[in-house]
Length: 226
Ligand code: SF4
Image (cartoon, rainbow, N blue to C red; front, side, top):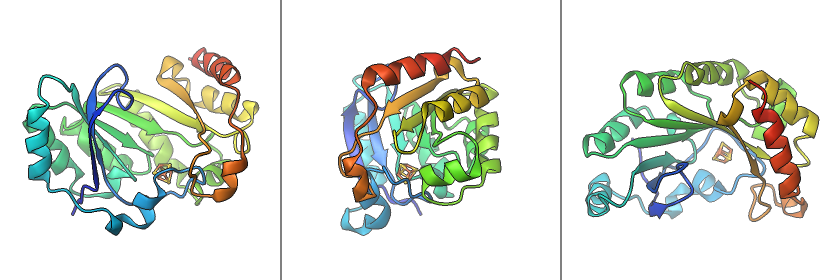
């Protein structure tokens, strides 16, 4: 059963070009060393659960101001009743954006097939290589599942974006280019700079992010790969 552990009324950052509310779901099957949401992953019980009825009431008071609702985590696709939550939000008149690590292609397919999601942002952790991916996700990852999710999104039945959080110690420029070649997603691949504040692995606090100009140049290069 989904427990909603956080609600942000308005965000200008979570849905490209839109103003949205954000729901935070707990727990994740990955352990990315740079993760900022680790309290939501390891200690979700420290946050009170917010009843969906309360959230719907607050969403209705924001009608006309927000463009939709972003469901994020943690990893939302861990929950079998995610389609029900998403459907409920859409039924109340709000488009839904999903943030996912792409580890559950079956859930992604269900959401798209049932038309209960309008935009998907999939975090791709590294080029599709077991060892490199493991370093970035903190666990062994079924790359078959990741590839399947990429394939589902590239069918274009829903708006989508791939995002990669770039950490100098984890991702060389060459590896970023490899991912660009593998995805061939053009401007749908976004590179995000790593933020050293409060990462899951405390040693990552010492890592300096890429220079923003270098990152933008790398993004320009991977976006030319189509
Ligand atoms: S996928 Fe990684 S960054 Fe995202 S919530 Fe899970 S552990 Fe954190």
